Length: 136
Image (cartoon, rainbow, N blue to C red; front, side, top):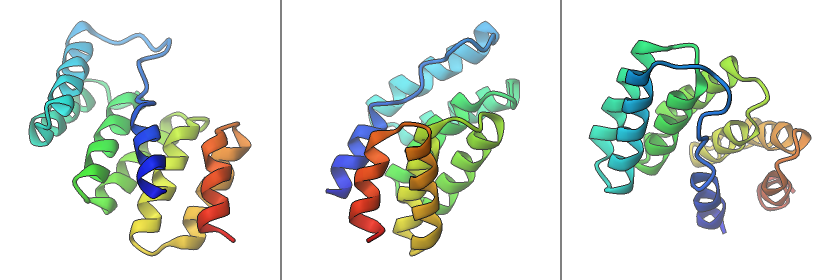
């Protein structure tokens, strides 16, 4: 069941929203997405890091880099990236959800359940299902 939640969360990679960014930033984001699809995790992380260097006040690169870090089992790194995304965009429900999944992986169940609750408060329905599984 955990894999299903994770796969659904990956499919919700944020596409950009209304934040104005430079062409170079968008090029790094797009390159990172392509590299991620091709399982070039190191290259994708590098591209997202370059995007962050260009615009550290936009959550997209942090969030996407967090997805990859989770996938390569760098749960602490994923938590840090999701936390940065949340600090920039406090209503990013999928970042709360994914951070909760990463916290489950490192045994921080209580904190994960708080993240699932927050994601659910923002209307992310998968969070309620995760709470039923991990937060009885």
